Image (tube, rainbow, N blue to C red):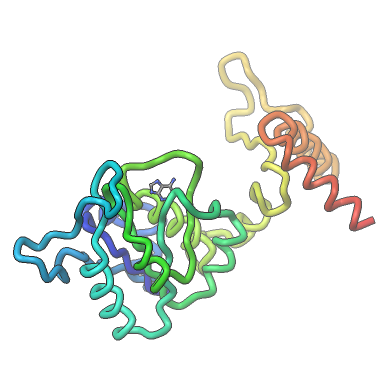
Length: 234
Ligand code: ADE
């Protein structure tokens, strides 16, 4: 898998791949990362990449020309590249998207800065647009990293234990049950006693009950979704 980050600030992104799970995955050649800087494609005298908004409005908007040329060059390199734009004005990114996109061979993430990207660029080149939540970041770089991370851990060989993918929150609309590590007792607090007794079917049903409690508390709409889904399975 190849990930390309189209960004004015690759240094914000590079450090994330220099440690831990994603670094190990890159060392094993499970995926590779490269960068395209739209400024390198600017035809303006001072390598400008932004301008005031046509029709008025606050702030600067990224010009079409540098991005058009950068993305055309990228597509010439690989006609199968799948281009994703990060913008708060898009559908929310979900775990299902991470699993689906892990099947692509090459994904490019285009990050906007300033007040955003000229709409024509997104219309011409965007295979998909995502938001990572209902808040405005200073640019798309963090959003592209969030999505790249979520996709990467679904690639074969990235996580040590392949089981750890299946039992996670959002795989079943329920949030994951609480987990504990050793010691069994710490400060004045203990692991739930059922976890210690070794009866795996009892542990499973306790975990399910705890999952439901957590989901009801933190994400009640998800619990409803889970119950509707279960009622169809009957
Ligand atoms: N750029 C700025 N805010 C964003 C968000 N919430 N999601 C994706 N891209 C963004």
